[in-house]
Amino acid sequence: MSDVIEEFYKQQEQIHDSISLSEFKLICNSPFKFTKEVINRGTLKNIRLQYFGVFEVSPSRVKYSLKTLEENYKEGKITKERYNKRKEILESYEES
Image 1 (cartoon, rainbow, N blue to C red):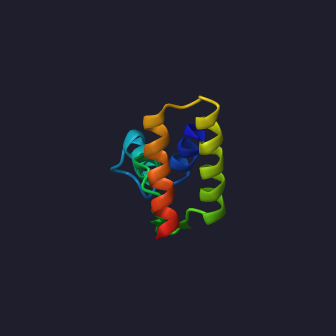
Image 2 (cartoon, one colour):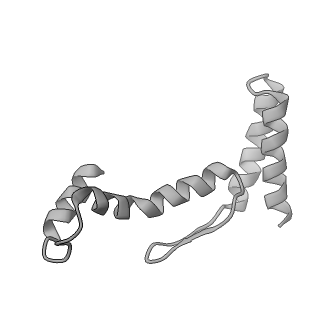
Image 3 (cartoon, rainbow, N blue to C red):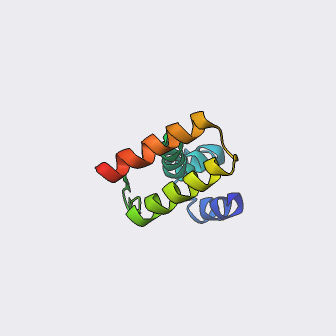
């Protein structure tokens, strides 16, 4: 991804005279970093990024995740604490 950003940076030289490559990379990666942070919070909120669109949580994906969570807990792959936390998040999304 870094190579693509550097190539784009070189193509836009006339526009970014006062912006360094590191600042340009930060600008380009910010929307994706933000999206990752929201996802990692576990709130399952839809995310709107201007010029990219809305990234929505699929209800069928939530149901599948609940099923997988149940299986992993029954097989002892996750702790009860992690199970309860993730189940609460998934069920709260289903209810909304």
